[in-house]
Length: 172
Image (cartoon, rainbow, N blue to C red; front, side, top):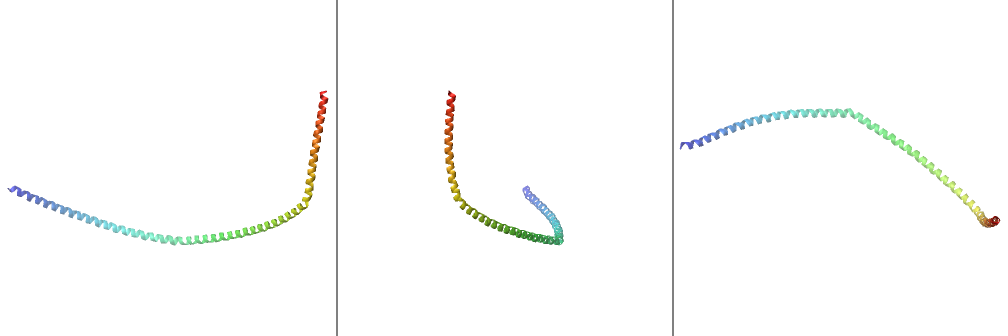
């Protein structure tokens, strides 16, 4: 009967050893984790210092660039404004010239229209004096056309007679 009592004691002893090994393993893991966390904290602090230094350098470079280029940008703005003003004055002068040309053209067109109206009135007056004479000429032309038609008929009739006569002489 001694044997069964030894088994629980051995199991308890094995469990105690396993528990001690686990505790030692956990303690070692805790030390390694703590060391790694401290290393990471140190590395992170170093990175923060580096990043802060880089940000300060970048801010300094940005300020220097802004300071260095500000006169050039202002000069460029002034040149653009001056060029815009010159272009505007040039365009206004061209527009004034075009308006003057348009006015001159308009006046010349009005004068030409007035002159044409005068010419048309004169032509109308000339036509009214010529129209009665044209009516008389039309009547005379009509009479001449009738007379020409009659002469053509007589000529054709005479030619037919001649052709008949000459045909009789040839037949004989």
